[in-house]
Length: 291
View (cartoon, rainbow, N blue to C red):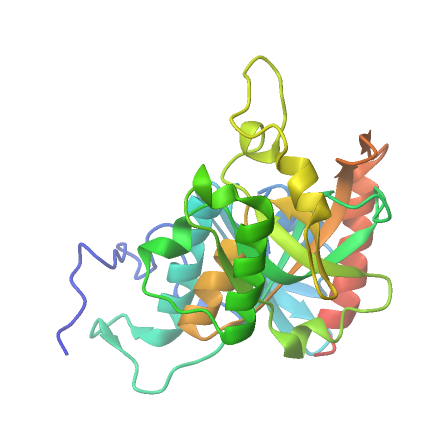
């Protein structure tokens, strides 16, 4: 195997991976991702100690300890394209030797938790509620740039989704990836569970109408009404499927946890989204720090 070329894995002058500006020793094996750079300090303020603080562009990282757990919280910015950068660089930090540019013979596994906001697609999942995503279903096309296979269960779910919604006739090929069951089982009490759909935008791709007409005005209704056995779509946002899909391919354990700030069925928006996020952060950290 040849070393990875400098044009493919960019390492800066301080020996850090390019976009995240992190060196391998600056990353914990438990990683929390947040979309908003300002949300990094909302999470890290709960740490007992912060050892590392790095920032490059929209990517801010704080690494510290909470109890006996070393945790890194990393801002990703919005969208699956940013997740492509973050997941690949997180993996490079633990599984590529930066001196030799060779893949390490023994691979390491990260636990990656997304703490974010999203919109509910079910009337009984209210604003300010919390959702743990059982699957990430991507309408964003990112994973289709990588070689990937679906498990039998994933394939059945996906085929039923395509049949019921007919979205594949107008959009890119949807894909689906399962959450890490070993992590999901800890997030039952106080959390709704269901499929999280990832969209490649906030307005038209999530069925919002301002001045532009939609090619699929029935999108929200189709997502809300989807059923496959006990599975239903709980919410949608802009990162989960990319995290689950890349995490699965790279061998990491991933779970997306979301505070609901809008209910697209009842057309309600949270009166205090900051409080909803703070509730999610406190509840999630209380569990993550014990794993």
